[in-house]
Amino acid sequence: MRARAALISVLALASVYALARASSAFDPAPYLHAQRLVDVGGRTLNLYCTGHGSPTVVMDAGLGDTTFTWRYVQPTLSRTTRVCSYDRAGMGFSDVAAAPRDAAAVVSDLHALLHNAGIAPPYVLVGHSIAGLYVRLFANRYPREVRAMVLVDPSFPFQERVFFRAAPAFAKRYVVATTSAALQCVQAARSGTYTAAERARCSAIQASVPEMCARGRSDCMLAHLLERQAASYRTSLDAWLEMRAIPISSEEVQRSQSSYGAMPLVVLTSTALESLPVSKAERNAAWRVWDDAHDKIAALSTRGSNVVVHGSGHYIQ
Image (cartoon, rainbow, N blue to C red):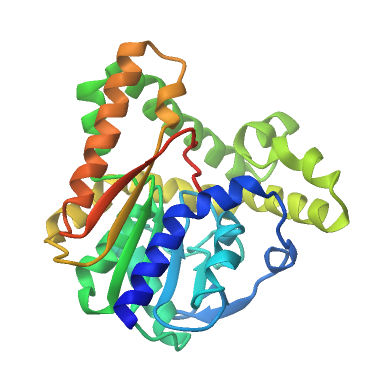
């Protein structure tokens, strides 16, 4: 029964993107303040759990993101089982942590969070983007606690090196440019004074503030809260620390990697790279790298699959 429930949860998440695209309605209340602050050793992490049942679906967000990124997915999956999302150190309502912020540090935090919150395994782990590295390391370290995994357009070890070899123009324009932009945002955050231009450049939520405010007071409050969090010192700095630690995180995942046996594993792959403003040859090369890497991740399980979500952006959820 538990294995069947895990597979149902995996398949539900693999298809839930269609529900999210069909409706823009969500309850902003859970994201306006911390839900449950759990001590993980002298500092706290924000945890948000809904629903009932086992296994518990545990969702980890992409770089610089918070529980908010799962606003469509969590209520849908909560109809089936218990679902928990959380803010990593320095994100959202969670306290900052000491560097480095590599995958090992993130996994240690998450394991302590679940243990101290009394959320017992088994878990279905869900990781978006950079968190694809984190949940894989968690499964590598604690295989008996993980029933299944869903990786949402996940990063893969040493992806920058692979992109540079296969699509150098793409890598230079997007990988290097993104890293440089992140560093500039951290420097602006450290100065303590953001100009309007810097807020617009550094805060992804900035462009959607007017649209959200038009929906009503609660949505407007949420929009400005997310903007402040995204432009804050702690979120900018910790996101940069995670980005800077990607080579270390890649080594940790690769060094600990082994087969997942028959564990259900779904990799969701977006087609975002197909629309990037680079040459067709570079787009095709970048896309092949991304899709092939996801095929290899799925092959780590005899029950793994790579599902291409056509027409989706990087934020499939």
